[in-house]
Image (cartoon, helix red, strand yellow):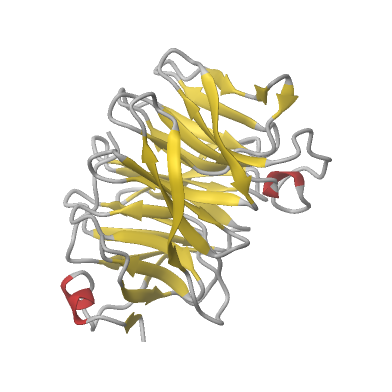
Length: 294
């Protein structure tokens, strides 16, 4: 079974009869998928493989960048420039229109960031990213001791200012904004829950209550997280992708045969969900479209 229904409303999002398609396989551990709706292509990372790859329906999967500094999360800013989290260098970078790479963040208070993991960009080009320590561990990064004694959530303002927003996570990972951008959702891999913060007028985060818990005994943890065009929230978790209504009711789970790390909506109608799950890239048709990246 591809889907596990917890609420009948889930069938308005994913059809009961759908099945996963294998787009590509034999990767090391893939992450950070992002869809370019202008050029209709998918970019995704393979951290241990130290590569970023590109998929199009015409050419299939090709190398986009090698080496990639063990890139993880990716996003587009408002100008369609790619921003990327790098495990090996503990940096957030931006690929400029001419192909050059600019460093947006690498240190906080003169100490190296842990290993920027997942990243999003708001409508006014404010960047938010999480900074767990996974990229300082064997296989997923370069083994080395952290310089910071916490794993934070950060904001990069359009003028380049880096601000620490929260430092009370065990391992912050996936994050997304509410549709009106008044709230920031961040999940915690080790605690397997999702927290929601109110974004104050000065950009700081307040409250930070637990919004939902990702339950299950199957393989998988809190990881990539996004909302669709109907404000349903999707988060990787045990057994696959957990889909919640905007009131935090679990609607159902899109089951995956491998540990799932992230996902993104693609194709011209944004009704194909591309899923990065360990060694394979999958796709599945959905009824509710995602949101364009920029």
